[in-house]
Amino acid sequence: MGKKVVIIGAGFGGLALGIRLRAVGLDVTILDKQAYPGGQAQPLRQGGYRFDMGPSLLTAPELVEELFEIAGRDRRAYLSWEKLDPFYRVYFWDGSYIDYTDDAEQMKAQLSRFSDHDARAYAAFMERSRAFYQAVIEEGLGRRPFTLRELLRFLPKALRLEALRSAYGLAAKFFKDERSRFIFSFHPLFIGGDPFRAPAVYQMIPYLEKAGGVWYVRGGMHGLAQGLAQLFTDIGGRLLLRTEARRIHTRGGRVVAVQTDNGDIPADVVVSNADFFHTYFTLLDKEALPTLARWRLRQYQYGMSAFLIYAGLSRTYPETLPHHTIVLGPRYRGLVGDIFRRKVLPEDFSLYVHAPTRTDGSWAPPGGESLYILSPVANLQSGISWADMAPRYQEAILTSLQQRLLDGLEGTIHTLSIYTPEDFLRERNCTWGSPWGIEPRLTQTANLRPPNKSHWIKGLYLVGTNTHPGAGVPGVILSAAATAQAILQDVGLSEPVRVPAPTYE
Ligand SMILES: Cc1cc2nc3c(=O)[nH]c(=O)nc-3n(C[C@H](O)[C@H](O)[C@H](O)COP(=O)(O)OP(=O)(O)OC[C@H]3O[C@@H](n4cnc5c(N)ncnc54)[C@H](O)[C@@H]3O)c2cc1C
Image (tube, rainbow, N blue to C red; front, side, top):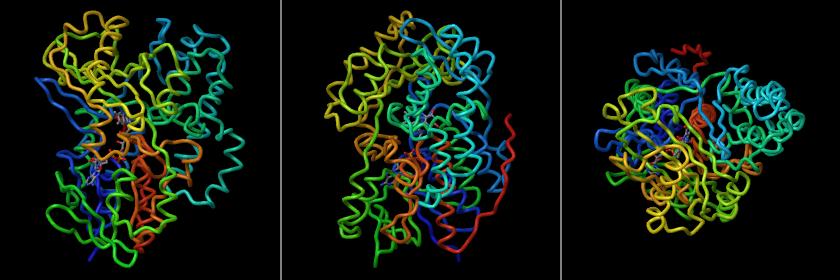
């Protein structure tokens, strides 16, 4: 009889881990308080329009492919995806823009409009990004638990590659124009990090995008989650939705069960894909953790949150908006400082706009646009009352987009809803309303992140955003590999080793 595993949370981390553990015969139950699998990748439907509420773009699809290989199923029977070109457009405050792509010649031609020096620096920067990618992805640092030994082995290389500088610091070393510095340093924001203090190792993302592409999954990122959930149940996993974990019960320092409103689920292994503080301070009894552990865990700092608008429009903006667009405000360092350090709501903002109708018309009624607008904001440590602030903030964002890019926007809005940091806290148990969790800064990276295997409670593990290697869909799928390794070692099993064979269609 296989060991009983309960995974709390059906985010991409929980689903990927469930598939890995079920594939080697363990008895796996995943439970989630929400109505749909996918964690942050929830779906929204309103008035004939559909929206992905959270993640919107897929990178490193080979990591998803690998899960199907491990489960012995054909990915194409579940999911299809297509590569985007450009990956995204970035509008700068001065009205110029760049269409970010993996084509080196196109990138250099566009950069030369900013600075000839920057166009020449592109290849060298990408080479550095590749070196980080090699360490984290190809040499597998991101897919095994990060031990002290691992750190000591990686440190000389990390120092040589200047991995401990900030992401922005590294970009500033290669590029002169502030616009180039932005496009080659903002990637940590994708994973909830401050580019001015996230270590440069996260500069692997530009090469990860270049090597593997940026993809649109048919049915969106929620469709991706549904595909993984289907795979998990097809191979015999049990998925319980609308089921909240209330407590993780322990006996003699070891997990024994997870309590839900429908009764206790016995467990030899409990994995939390839920928020980190929620796991340690709400789900576990106070007595389960030594005082020193509680003190240590409280030292972790949370990163940013987001304010989201989902708008169904009666017209489209094909000239202005490709599938993914970033619209920058006048400030970079100052704005990031307001969000991460000062935790105030500034007058200006930078926005990310998702227009999936550009690639797939099924997201909106004919002639319409399904638009999602994301503004990075401070987490709830700011003390901002979003119930009071949201209407004004929403209006400011829509007015700004209308003035800068989307002529007549406000008159075309058919349906509209918003999602605030308070919703992340209430609906998804995200501490401080921060869906990206523990901020990826130097002191909270690699073996300084909360470990995949709990130091303090036997049989308790973490998977997803808050553990190694970190946030983002590729990050949490890698975390599932690392956590699976720790669990399988502990229960005396080993994972079937399969080399992923990418088929990008
Ligand atoms: C707005 C937004 C946009 C993003 N865009 C991208 C993108 O384009 N590409 C990308 O790669 N990444 C993106 N990310 C990051 C990415 O979505 C996340 O890092 C990733 O999805 C997190 O997955 P996870 O497995 O850690 O868990 P989560 O998705 O955070 O899921 C955790 C789950 O646990 C559940 N839960 C919590 N407590 C309990 C409990 N007590 N009982 C039961 N269930 C519980 C929650 O309901 C939730 O469903 C984005 C994130 C956000 C918020």
